Length: 173
Image 1 (tube, rainbow, N blue to C red):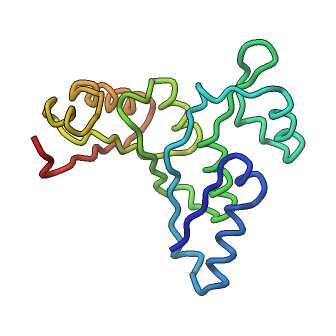
Image 2 (tube, rainbow, N blue to C red):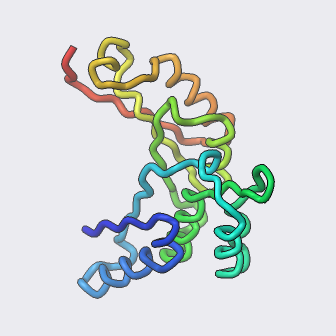
């Protein structure tokens, strides 16, 4: 088991590749390695300046695809898509590989779900936790059970064929 934090800088500078190589050196088989992309800042919230964009553009042809223009000279950076792209490059994922991300039902929009789908995620799992509003309050969750149903519908509309929800059994309340 290995864990690596590879934000934009780590992913750009080889943390993912170095972690995989170290695991292999310690006896892991590349085919048995599994990776998880944890929650990250969404593209709609990750505004960067032109110098950030230029660093990626000059690093490797094609990295422009992880940016969309914003106001003025600003860009919105797709960190989940970039990390997934680096994982694909490192592992050589099969075209039909399942690639899952987790999301809070209140944190997604139709646009953010479409961006995740374009980045190559094939499955989204929502943290529903409970269908009982008082249990959600106990768990300090701010979404409503109805929001989960809306998020699932938005995920389907964005092109996710595989959508799941996480429930917690036996919570107080």
